[in-house]
Image (tube, rainbow, N blue to C red):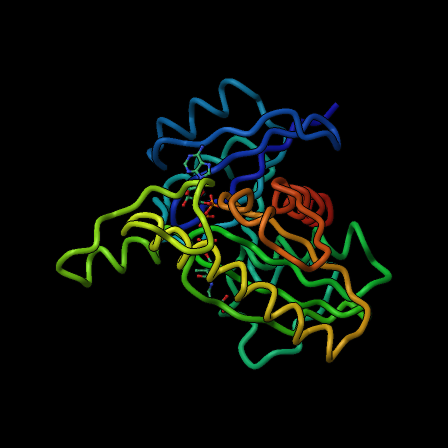
Length: 241
Ligand SMILES: Nc1ncnc2c1ncn2[C@@H]1O[C@H](COP(=O)(O)OP(=O)(O)O)[C@@H](O)[C@H]1O
Ligand SMILES: CC(C)(COP(=O)(O)O)[C@@H](O)C(=O)NCCC(=O)O
């Protein structure tokens, strides 16, 4: 059975999913992208193939290590993808967004799909049932909002995300939690309402490291899948082997 490592280098975290055959068995959060870290993964898992989605300026040496030891594919807009990108500048689309859309097309090929990723940023990614990725939107993510308010004011503290807050905050911390978490939830529901006006039937998928904070607050029907990007990366790795 083949072993595949699917790397997702985002702006907050570097992740690596381990697949044995088609099954995802493990998810590792890397401390950094030093060559030793990558060498250690290769020695531990002996992967047959590897794929990298990166939206950061990662250490270029790791690509050499993966190419020397495995069948390596770096995901770009030029990869063989299960959808078209009829947009102005496809080369500027984040690789992570390509992987998310690949997962949606793989899982729900007959429907319009909107994938919402809640990581460093919020991205909306719309792919129609004709498998055209039309784009979407990008806005600040959870930590970015908390940090921006702390960094750009004299008095606001840096707040840790938390589940437990009321609609009407009763102190600075709960005001910030309500403003950011409920505010983002209303933003997501508002976008989905607009998509519904335009495309009455579509599938909404939610993913990303901050997904869990929003599930209790969203009014629209949405499928949550924390591993969506890895499913997309695996599908792309199969097509680009
Ligand atoms: N175990 C964890 N370690 C660190 N951050 C986590 C963890 N679980 C959830 N998070 C949250 O996930 C966010 C990053 O989500 P992620 O989807 O990995 O983003 P990105 O792809 O932009 O790096 C962080 O802002 C953090 O709040
Ligand atoms: C929008 C993003 C910053 C999201 O990154 P993430 O939150 O996953 O770290 C990334 O997909 C990116 O750098 N995109 C390039 C611009 C684009 O997709 O149009």
